[in-house]
Image (tube, rainbow, N blue to C red; front, side, top):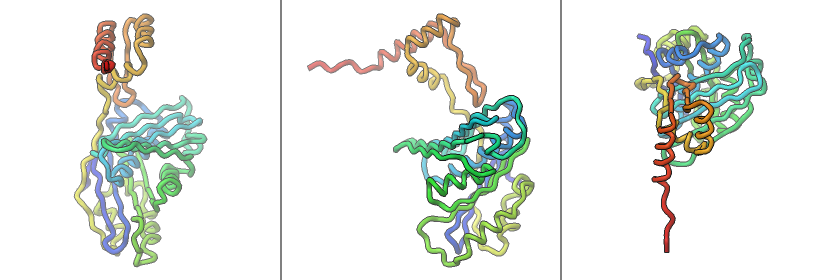
Length: 290
């Protein structure tokens, strides 16, 4: 039976190799319902979204992973966010006329910014050029350069679903079977786009690794969820400052903010702004008197 909106982990019992397979259905369609994307942009964004789910699951942390891709090609910006609870959101910006092509053709000299923000602990950010002809190749190069981890990805997306598979060689473990990693990658590379999008995970693993001893874990649900809120909007406006907000109010009569991820609309009038900065002033610590 096909499991929808699910990520499943698996391990090779006799080799230090782990893997994950994710399928995004309603999660992916929730992104597409909020904005119409041309097919090349849609597929690119879907593959990055599946990849974000896989990469977030491969990191032991509580927090948020954000992948931001900037380029000077027809696709100017891609942003995908995945939390450790496997909630995702994504958005892309592009020029009007766009044709299918490699990521180099779509993004130009694309740059990937990978940010990991734990709920507790230090924020980590890695920045690399996005090389390769596909999203999978570009991310594999990122891991090779930034994480020094042998990682392979297979990704696919269409109008109904996005899916991906990840293989990773565990660090600092002895590979008793010297050919195990190369064999796992070679067999993984035989999976087709159609199989990745349509076959149940157990069937994929049987098709690829029927001669290997694989342990498949229970699935983890994946869902669309936007982290925007009025409180976050107010926090951004506080950072803009009273003068900037007052200028916007003088020009437009109100401050309007639309979330590009989910389409939520927020408005603040003069009274809201006064309360916003009055509250900010009240929470500022008073100077200590000696």
